Amino acid sequence: MTRSQTTTCAVSGGGPAGIMVGLLLARAGVEVTVLEKHGDFLRDFRGDTVHPATLDLLDELGLLDALDALPHRDLSHIRMGTAERAFLEVSLADVPGRHKRVAMVPQWDFLSMLTEHATRYPGFHLVLNADVRGLLEEDGAVRGVRYTTPDGEHELRSVLTVAADGRRSTLRSAAGLIPVDLGAPMDVLWLRLPRTAQDPSGLNGRIGGGGLAVAFDRGDYWQVAFIVRKGEHVEIRARGIGGLRESLGRLLPFLADRTSAITSWGDVAFLEVGLDRLPQWSVPGLLCIGDAAHTMSPIGGVGINLAIQDAVATANLLADSLYRAQAVPDRFSRTFNPALVQRVQRRRELPTRFTQRIQRVIQDRVIEHVLEGDEAALPEILTNVTTSKPWSVVMGRALMYGLLPEHVRTPERR
Image (tube, rainbow, N blue to C red; front, side, top):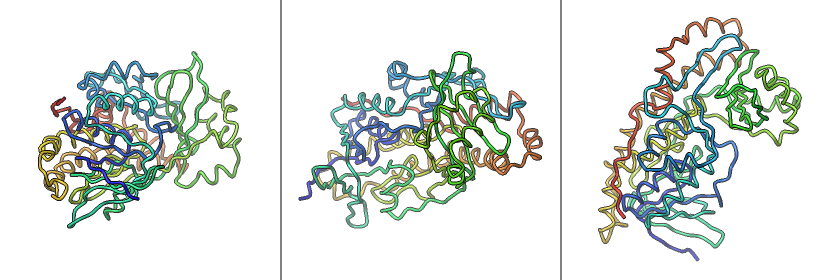
């Protein structure tokens, strides 16, 4: 038997975009139901770089102290280059803005913190173990979603549905929305290595010898991203774990004595890198945000922050209209104004395109040459990609804040 419920806004996906839009809408008095496929937020090697733009938003919500109370590591210095020379070196102390750090916070802790705050508002509902299977459609418009839980099948009717269900969005596919692939030459192997007090701090990336690795300071360990050519992870696994240890030791010599901590491929997680963007983020009754609208490369660690910016813009632009819609008796048979929903894409598309353009330049001018072993071109590449302080400040500002950083404009209704 299918159970039916209603809500004003149905959100598919309990990641950063879904939880943040749920929090802000509930804070503005809108009834919102967030459907999360898993039973908790505990998944390793998910993005956990909280940039200054997001710290600004948390500050505006009064949540900065709550974030700082979580286990985290603050990064204030970023370096990428060869052992001899950097092509990107940024001190966040030089970047304009209130917050001079990137907070490395486990995503499960970050999402739990946001959820705990959201549940203080009576309109916020989170359903775990909710596997969204498809859309409810009537008269050419989306009217909600179908989902399953361990206790059976459900239908959730809504005024607006938000797809925040990631790069392989079920709802995006169900609506016939197809992203344009912008191309990514690499994939990533994620792993952990022990850290000692004598190690450098911050973010350290090294290139050379046909490889690239980035080590993120997590306090008592290093979270390491080993970047490989698209599809090369199959060859690397075939060569054995010893080859991976050797490559990491060569790229990150200060960690060479600890690569033995990688005992099997079970210690290594694979991330298939994508870079794409929807030409159209919405259809009547449905809006895609975050990775469902635009998959970001891991370059700059911007994915979480772009998704949260989408969520804030969605709430800023739609909360009042959704709040008023709750007073309309036949709201579930009406189509929520598509022109209002389209404003979200118009607001967020330029920042998305700008950030993806930066990522593509770095991919094309540096990463692709490095992964192809084009060592002869490397000095020229590093000369063209200057490390002057003004350029570093501009790049730092672009990656830490992006274009048109959002601010909380929604009222708090209790």
